[in-house]
Image (cartoon, rainbow, N blue to C red; front, side, top):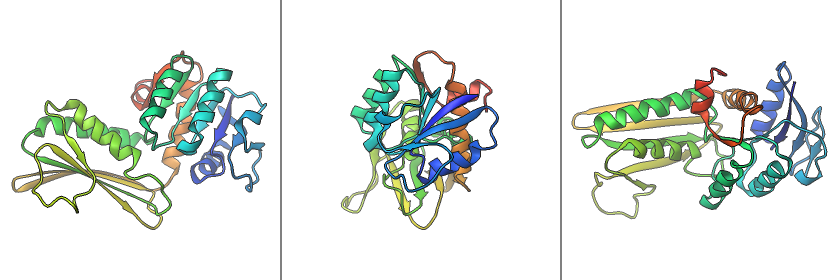
Amino acid sequence: MIKVLLSGCNGRMGQTITRLSVNNNELKIVAGFDINDSIKNDYPVFTNIEDCNIEADVIIDFSNPNAFESIIKYAVSRKVPLVLATTGLAPSQRALLNKASEQIPVFFAANMSYGVNLLIDLVKRASKALEGSFDIEIIEKHHNQKLDAPSGTALEIANAINSVLDQKQEYIYDRHSRREKRSKNEIGIHAVRGGTIVGEHTVIFAGNDEIIEIKHTAMSREIFASGALRAAKFLYDKKPGLYNMTDLIESNTI
């Protein structure tokens, strides 16, 4: 049985992971970390991760960037593998993440959904095939409680597109102050926030007299929670290094 320390356990995703883990025969949440301790769980919850004295095999982090440094420090000091699902990391935090992966196994994905990562693969193929003749726009939609914009997944999609193009594109987030026509060397990235939208990402390839759209819609948070639990199982016995959803898919752990 793999013992899990769940960071962000009392948030929406944390509670979804907690619920799904109950029927999981391979993993068990043995402790949680959250600044909000008002929710009662079947495991102890610490408001300071340094106070956690319960042994864990893997940490799953679904909190926020403000807690990132303390979680990385805790994981590295105790040599505990880390599944990081928190988005909106600053470049300096990504650098810390890379450095930590030299000492412990770290799994990082902007989106834990299998379907989203398939979308990214399809978008890369389309971008290469259509390069130079189609404009690319990304629209992401999320609930009205989401803090970061654009989403980490939207940026991951944009980065994936740029990785296969000969002419690298500029990311344009807002055009209201730009009274000029669209450049051929840009990717528009747009964020919509409202209601209880779990997550929707659409990539638009707009050409002359034709449009191609590749879209993924998340119907519930369970797809992300399931992905995080699979990632924890995958990471449990790995050597230090930086792993991602591609590694997970290729391992057949899905």
